[in-house]
Length: 161
Image (cartoon, rainbow, N blue to C red; front, top):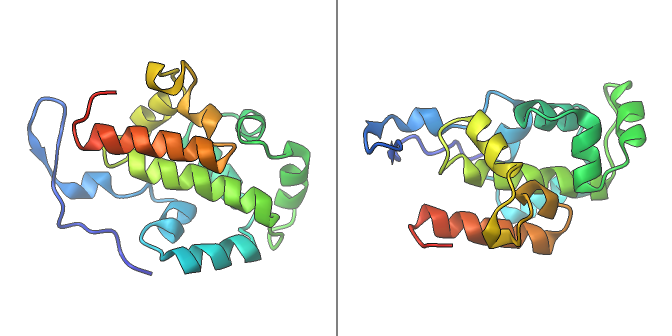
């Protein structure tokens, strides 16, 4: 696994240079697993499925109740909670793809926002550039995720929405 690049620098909202280490993914396994992986490795991860605990980690990071996250990204909460009761249980490839989609967008947003709380706020706030929908509500499909990623890319590079 390729480590997160700590040589990058970032600037906070008032222009002060800050250590890039503040941008590293949360100390949560699923975010570290995805960061820097090649697409073929992520495809294999989707095929094999992630542990159900990954869903809990994502919900915790985004400060959302598990049931709400499941509903918003199109995963059956009952299935996730049943599998979470067994530590070795893995989620389906569809559920894994949806979770990794959220993780991918969250990791990209962390390049722009300084904290997980700021990322969670942004993901849950309707944006006019997304037709007044919250970014998280678009992550149930790959096309919606592409819209969110395009918006984040524009924000990262200073383009107006």
